[in-house]
Length: 185
Image (cartoon, rainbow, N blue to C red; front, side):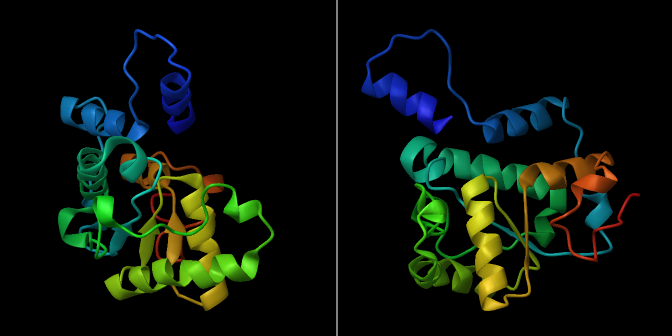
């Protein structure tokens, strides 16, 4: 999404469509009743979640409005009472330290050093799960947990959407902890 948006702007390519993030569409579909998610599965479990604001999506593209939509979707899926926001957050949230090709750069020690800011931010929430809607963020945050022995789980947003819909397949649960790995099977 970011590459298409940036490329159209950089090369001044005319287009006649609206560029939206899947996050914005999830929020729209939930509001319209087309995506019938709910947080009932977490009502008694009370598993706590936080969310990463991806740089390309929030700071470099749509700003706080898309961060608000992200929180709307997350709260609809896990329950408002089970969401713990990071501080700072939205446009002021810290970068995970894994984007822009840094994950594949070979500078693992430096990536871990700079990523420790994000790791500490996640740990300070006390959440059991960090939702990462960006694949680079997911990989970096997951790696930071492994490296620093964080004790949290990193999960894709779509995984929780599917879990809330009761359609998460048995083979799609690799990033869930033992508290959720068999939920709904």
